[in-house]
Structure formats: structure tokens, C-alpha cells
Length: 170
Image 1 (cartoon, helix red, strand yellow):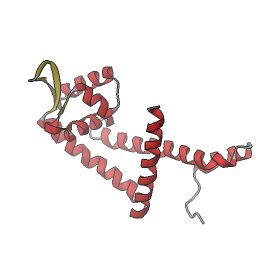
Image 2: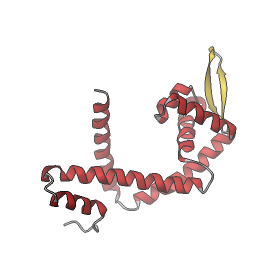
Image 3: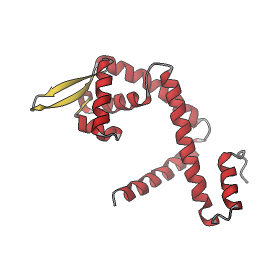
Image 4: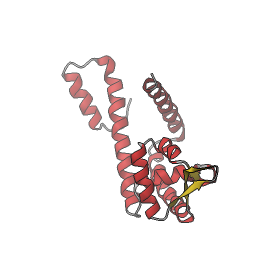
């Protein structure tokens, strides 16, 4: 027996059911609705918390990609792949991070036509401070579930992600 209170998705699914919706897909619809809503709620929470500290979510994502990289630097193309943006968007965002003093553009010593985007010391400090904020939000999510459920949900979402990614590559 489910003891979790009903939510808006339950009401949506009930409306689909009343409208003659296919019972066989209601579970998938529920999952899809909830995934989108939870992702939206998570993004809003992160944006709200980060903006209170003067950083935007996209900035954190770019700083994180550079922080994880060897020598804390990537080519613009690698940044583009890491944050899943177009080259024009990445160029604009690199410029904005550069203006804040968080990254710099360095010539590639092996190919003077190419550049690396390198995380500055100030960028590293900002990244670490922002990671702490993000981690607090993630801890808040974890409080809703026990560790075993977190493992099950992670495994299920990983399978869904691989499935959807496979469809994109076809």
C-alpha cells in the first residue's frame, strides 16, 4: 500500500484515465510527468540557492567541467561537449566567465591557432564554494529517500538515460 500523499501527477493521470486513456501507458505517463516535474523543481532550487550567492547554474556547470578536467583546462569544443551546448553559446558563456575572472583563454602551445579555456585561481575558489551549495541541495533531496531506494532509483534512471541516449544516436 502506498503511503505517500497524492500529488498533481496523480490528478493528471486520473484525468487521462477518465478520458479513456490506455491503462497500459499510465505508469509510463506518471513516470514521465514526475521526472520532468522533479527535474524542474531541482533546477529551480539550485538556481534560487546559487543566485543568492551571485552565480548562475550554467556558470557552475562550466566551472565544474573545467574543475574536473586535467590541468583544469579544456578546448572550447570539449567545454561544448561537457555542458551540451552549441559552439555559439559556449563562446558567449566563456566570454562572460572570462569577464568575471573565473577563466582565461590560453594559446595551445602545440597549435597556436587553438586555445584552451583554463580555470583561474578565482574560478577554482568560486567552483569549490558553489559545489558546497549544490551539495546541500542534493543532501536535501536524499533526505526524502532511504539509501537503498536511492540506489534503486539511480539504477533505474541510468537505464532510462542509456535507453533514451541510444534512441538519439539512431
